[in-house]
Amino acid sequence: MRVLVIIPAFNEAAAIAQVIGDIPEGLAAEVIVVNNASTDETEKNARKSGATVLHESRRGYGYACLRGLAYASSRNPDVIVFLDGDYSDHPNEMSELVAPIKAGTHDFVIGSRTMGESEQGALLPQARWGNRLACLLMLWIWGVRYSDLGPFRAIRYTSLTNLNMRDTTFGWTIEMQIKAHLAGLRTTEVPASYRRRVGVSKITGTLTGTMRASAKILGTIFCFAIVSHRMRKNLELHG
Image 1 (cartoon, helix red, strand yellow):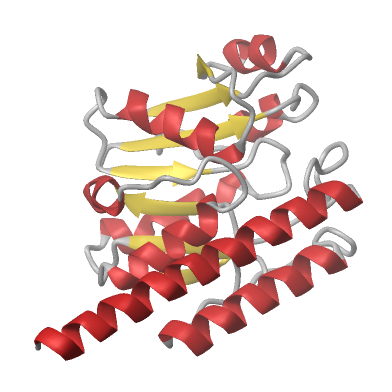
Image 2: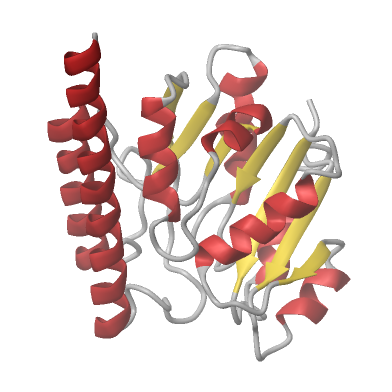
């Protein structure tokens, strides 16, 4: 299967070469780093490490992912892997991440940090509790059980295009998980190791970033909850 790796990156010059270098040899047909308005040498270091570098001037995780997907549409991939550029995930575990898709048993695989081994202090308390709350809300509203919103994930390309992803910032990962459930994708989680990132997190590393991300994630959940409720009502009325 043709696997493309998309790495959104904002000021990850110190980590990006390690991230790319730890991807298992021969697994990825192409590694795509989306330089999301970095002001350091992220692009230079990514190119030196053999990655294709794209530019997205609109700052936002979702914007960077969407830019990567726009490029991927011309590369005929079978599987897309999303991976952060801060070296907190373990790229060498990518084979385990894509294995259920290669085996034909699943369409979407999430690397769960809560199921894997985490370095002390790697997953900050605000991130841990935020993930737990979001997963609990998805269980209550849709009956779908997730253990994490981890960014290290693999998905069948055709399945991903059918999800019609829209979010441009912090709601990207949870939008994918909600839509995957609503679309009936075969989803599973695999343990993913996690370590302290290189540098300071742009999200959970600051109070402002934490509050913005939390508001966006909760807002995404409630927006989809309202849409799901209306759809159920329409089915009851016209069923």
